[in-house]
Length: 142
Image 1 (spheres, rainbow, N blue to C red):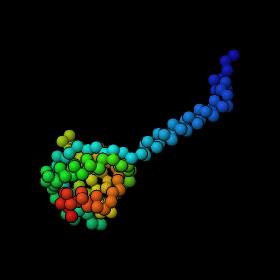
Image 2: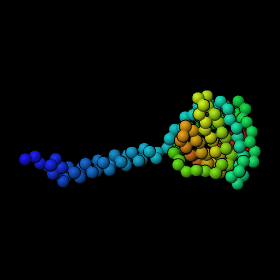
Image 3: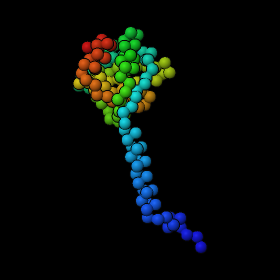
Image 4: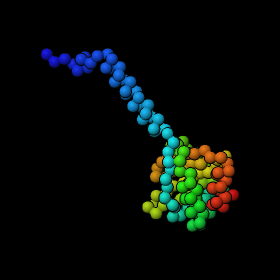
């Protein structure tokens, strides 16, 4: 007669297995919500849109120099981003297109909050007002 494999395990073994599963789940969740490094390629083209009360009030194309400044700023601030699944009303929205045809956005709030959406994923980072002011002035969007 064969015995059930689970019936052969002792209570300490089952307790250990439960602890291992809980630890693995905790490690997985912690890594899923940990800060990310954001790496984006330089956009080929883009436009900046200023919004008021959720509606665009001004739109203009970005020059090659402004796109370089945006890429440089994002490159200098790669770490500390967090995945985000929340929708945000645009404030100062930069729409970009990449060489591979993909599109992305950078939503900038004067409070220092920046939201980047690219390749179907969205990330947020809270910077100081001065750091965001540097980005806004570098693309001449004041």
